[in-house]
Amino acid sequence: MQRGCACGAIGLFLIASLFFAGCSDLHPAQPAQEKMSPGDLQMFVQDAAEYAGHTEKEMVLSQFNQKDGPFSHGDLYIYAYDYNGTLLAHPYQLEHVGTNRMNWTDARGLPAIRIGAHVAANGGGFIAYLYPSPSGGEINESFRDSYVPKIGYVCPAGDDWWVASGIYFTDSDEGGDSAVPNAVSEMITLVERGVLYGRDQGETTAFAEISNKSGIFVDADAHYLYAYDYNGTLLAHPHIPASIGSSLIDRQDPFGMKMIRALADTAYSGGGYVVFVWPNPEKENRQELKIGYVLPVDERWWIGSGVYLSEITGVDTSFPVPSP
Image (cartoon, rainbow, N blue to C red; front, side, top):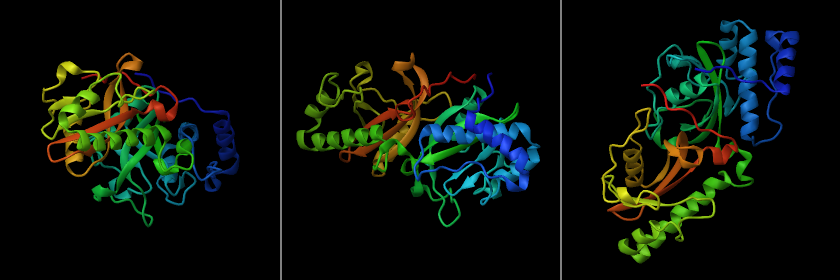
């Protein structure tokens, strides 16, 4: 198990300034622009982890728990957990501080805390999940329809705890003026094209085209479509033809999420995002988080596609399989 996040030059300057200024004058560097890059997010979390490594833990957690504190800027804030899943700090979830949330899942069933702890324990890195954004100074996790994609970064803060933060797609600079990163926008367009094609051409033609490795639904960046019915039976796929006709509804990732069931349920309810873990063939089939998007074609079947998190962050976000 590897723990320890590197801190950048800006982070070292920040830590020095915190010591000289005194705890009551903490003012970590805030984003200079309205939108942030994944690299900015990484540095923000690493700065918080570095501060935690040089300051008394109780004081650190007190700072992290303040909505108007130095590590909280609206949608951008630090939260902290121990490796057992106990929430140590969260400025918008104070009622949950001290409770165990290791089995908490997002609106589609992704065990985000379990994954975050695993990535942090292996040195830290990017994660992704769905989460409601602060509204009126509050976050209500019970509003399932308010969950939207978030890119997170986690970093060990000590031997027994870790810190994290995240940015919503609308806060990321990866899409320019778009509300979503470019890779995600192109993936959504691919799914929408597939739905129109399926409705226009019918099942037989659509399934053949979706399963064609060199067909119109496999783009230059190797994105592709897949099709299932709502019972989880695979109907079309360009890369796993041997599984076509089989039900994959009970397939689950190493963290226990049944991703095909989650995708099918999302499509049945009208479509949308699902974040899940899937082996990345470009990374020797190591596990990696994938941002999926699905839409129903009709009352029998649906179409989906996805982009790996590394396509958004620009760095390797795969991770080893957790121990049983």
